Length: 111
Length: 112
Image 1 (cartoon, one colour):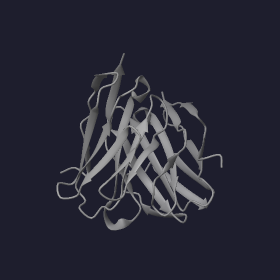
Image 2 (cartoon, each protein chain N blue to C red):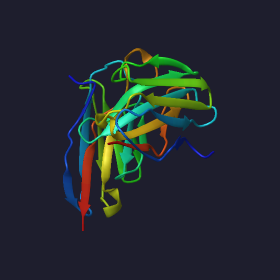
Image 3 (cartoon, one colour):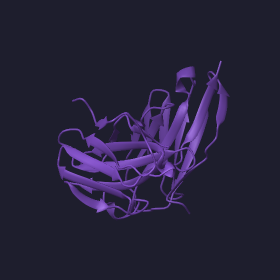
Image 4 (cartoon, rainbow over the protein chains, first blue to last red):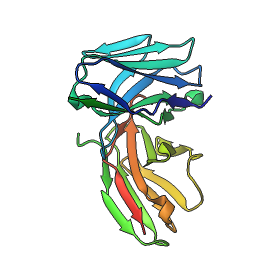
C-alpha cells in the first residue's frame, strides 16, 4: 500500500450535492491527519485537522477509520466556491514530524 | 504574522545555471519543509528540518539539489546545475511541533 493514496477524480457535482472523498494510508501508528485545500495556482491551505474519530466544521465533516486505515472528507450542500483540489495529509513513520501529502482529489462544482 | 515568505515568486533560468530559492518560516515554528509540485508527481517532500537540523532528505532527487537552514528564520534550496526537468512549483512550509503545516506562496521555476 502507498503511504497515502487518494482517488484523483475529477469529481464533477452540481451545486447543492453531497460529495465524499476517501484517503487510505499505510502507517498504522499515525495519530493525526489533515485535509488541505488547494486552489489552482495557489498554495495548499489547511481545511481540517483530524485527531480522533472525526471532526465537523459547518458543511465539512472528516472521519477517521483506524481499523481500515482511511480518512474521509464529506462536503454537504456543495458551493461553486468549493471547487478545488483536496489533499489528504498523513504523518510519516517514526513520529519524526514528516508530513506526506496524497496526490489530491479534484472537485468541480457546477451550477 | 506575515506567514511563510518565499522568494522569488517566479524564476526563469537557462539550463545549467544555479538557482537559489529562499524561505522565511513563521516565527517560532520549529519545523521547515521543502516540497516540489508537478502535475505528474503531485506534491513531493524534498527535505525537512527540525530546529535548523536536516532530519530527512530522502526526497532530494539527486546531488544537484541541496538545502540549508543556517538559522531559525531562513532556509535555502539550491539547484546546481539546473535542468529542464526541474521545472516545477517549489513550496516551503513551516509548522510548530509537527502539527499542521503552513505554506508559502511558492516559487514557480522554469528551466529552459
